[in-house]
Figure 1 (cartoon, helix red, strand yellow):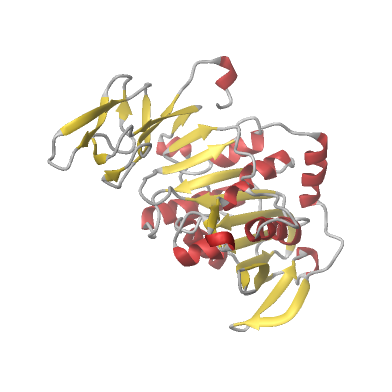
Figure 2: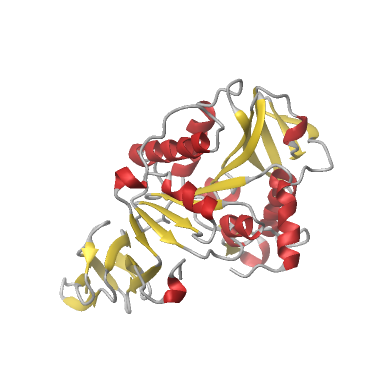
Length: 365
């Protein structure tokens, strides 16, 4: 992740108090006020506030509204953003944010927590990973590669721009961005963490994660753009897509509360962490993908240790004959598997988290 002076200067304004107050449009949805800009400094302390944030518009001019909950503590402190729903089929994070926000007593809170329970309404409504656009017969974009957005871009880019500049700017010190794997694939509780940032390291290891990748980030992702702006952030992958998983939700809540306790935002005792979970740490990944079409039978499961050359999957024709065998390209631990049996060429079969000995990969490749 390269940091330019311009990018850093622009990004750092995320933690600088905004000049404008919270802007109310005058509209309400189900009794909840609509805002086009948030400034947590002018909200009443010791209270929880609910808003719908006004995003971009669809092809017939209807607005995409983002649900936002702000718990403003009775005392000043860290400003923590909990984001979920950048991808519409990744719902465990939504439930984690809902539960964390519901469990906060703002009278006992030090600092402010902003909970975004569904940042990408377009994709959530379709239960799809991508934001589906309407122009020219339709097209899709990965919303989590568009930050900080463009004021004059596509609807997706404008939505990212408005969230960055009108929801987070001036209101954020730190971010936890919550995801899951995408439809057709699986994950354990897994974290992408930039190990060049000591605060991120601390945050990541306060979660009871199964696996953590030391990771330099992806340009345009919420996490990476926050880190580039000098603000600690990490991406938490909470298992599988499309359905609430009680274990993943519970551990996501526990990890988030651990971070809040560590930051001095709430009182309490640190719960399960990487130490109790015996987390596997890696710095690189290797994918095993199909080279042709056919039914796929994966021979390993999440968390399995694998050796280079070990058979991890086979592909079958329509009569059940094995037409292709696939082996692990590296030693490591199974991080993800393809859960859909029907696979075209380039479909994911197995992803392996590994420990690359190359010194340049020490903090992640």
